[in-house]
Image 1 (cartoon, rainbow, N blue to C red):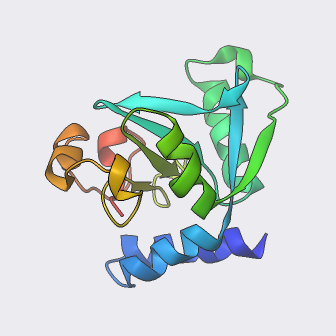
Image 2 (image 1 turned 135 degrees about the vertical axis):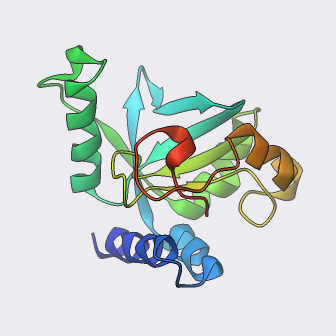
Length: 158
């Protein structure tokens, strides 16, 4: 999946302090993102009052997430088959996230401490009609930008 690799490369550039955030967002919009299913719907997590759709750049990133779930609190995930949707990033940002009816963003590659990225529900990422004020979004997720770690407050901002 070359598209996912390009997105992962843009994320790595931003995490390294180089690269253009607009180019990364453009790459996300073009990329096919893998989103696992959870109980019939897309896999999401809530943190800080924001519902995060969990997406992955490729099957290897999704496999790392599945592995982390099987060794963590979700022991039932061992040997589980993971079904997923392959969705264009633009569709996630422009259609699916707005249809959720709550402040929602996209969390990419959350099992990769050095490769994760949050795309919060702010203007220029999601449609203005469903965007929250950027300051409110930052406050909701701790307003911290860290390199590494797997906790929600330790993931890189877009």
